[in-house]
Length: 241
Image 1 (cartoon, rainbow, N blue to C red):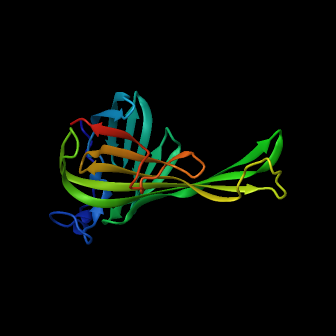
Image 2 (cartoon, rainbow, N blue to C red):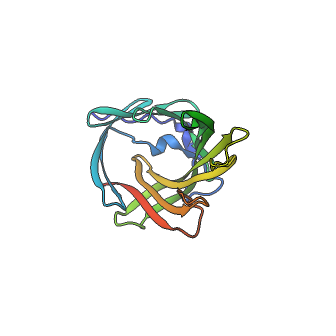
Image 3 (cartoon, rainbow, N blue to C red):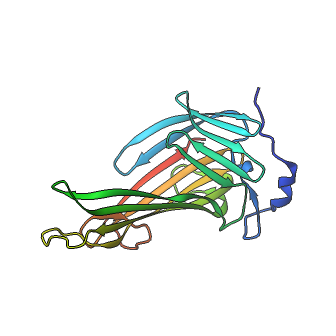
């Protein structure tokens, strides 16, 4: 027997009628899977890689469990003001806003800093720190997506995510002349991606189109804010209705 997701009737007071707008609030619980189901997905990228996979979704009161190949992949826990998404594969926990308007932040991951030593012939010449921030915001409400071969219709929310990575280098004093290292900050990847959630269904589409540019030292990086790209890559995931 299907277990229907219990949604508070109070949420209807915050959801406007018709299309979305700056004043319309959306209850994110409505855009999660509303009943037990199996969702089939297709992934593709510019390198020719393709894959099919299925999500086995179990809805039980305030908890939604998603399994892939009989292994738990994600767990959503619905609280009074937030939705906690625990990603088992990446070991990342996201705290999602439960009530959200266009332009509001759905979630933001704390800045992570990864520090490594720069060495030459077993001598530490300095450190290189990689700083990463990820923020996803509600972009707009849609009633259709017709940009790709697979079309979607219904009550859909589009989210824009920005992954901003910076690399900061600190070198020791009196660095030998033959060592070419620069002290300071270098902008690294600026990656924009999108995902879409349909009311009662959950995630239906993930789009990541990357603009590749060259840095001043010749290295490649992602800069999706650039209008000129040396190369382009993409990765798309489609829910098969």
